[in-house]
Image 1 (cartoon, one colour):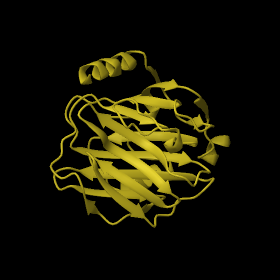
Image 2 (cartoon, one colour):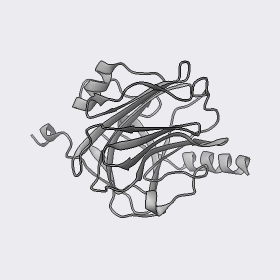
Image 3 (cartoon, helix red, strand yellow):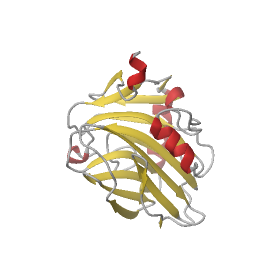
Image 4 (cartoon, helix red, strand yellow):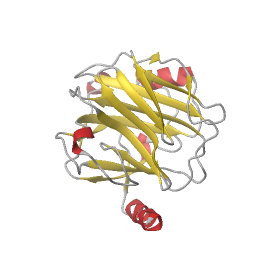
Length: 228
């Protein structure tokens, strides 16, 4: 079964398009068990260090998935899940960490970065330039195999198992991922919207992706300077 799922992931990657999404967003306008965006990462080796950054805009106060990365041997291998306003849950290889007290907003753009290093297990979440206390999770863990990366849904199985009640509703933009822990200065540059080095695993300016269900590609209004 796992081999079949890996084959399906490879086939989906072959049908993905590659685009510069600068100034664009993925809009998820309705709650759904089918609407999603699959991202294809430039991964050639096991993942042991990661930084993922993204922006989201939503009016939901219920739980919803922001970024879901599964590997064939482990669901919730690297999952960023928002439980409620200002409350997040991180998952690494099945381990979980709840974080609260960070300054996110309803009906506003929120910039999020998550760093993790398996060597020490140190992880931290940044939201709108504020950082959570560093904690330890997933020490000595290696994420091996073709990753299935989904926006808009939480994968309960590799590439699927979506639950409508956990689906994202709103807009997502500027998704980047690196195979290193980027510096606090780079994170602040990202959150300001300029001057940062794009991700080497996922790069919004050169993104391979495919969409399913009710997902639209629209113009972003995050950077108001782009209007002039």
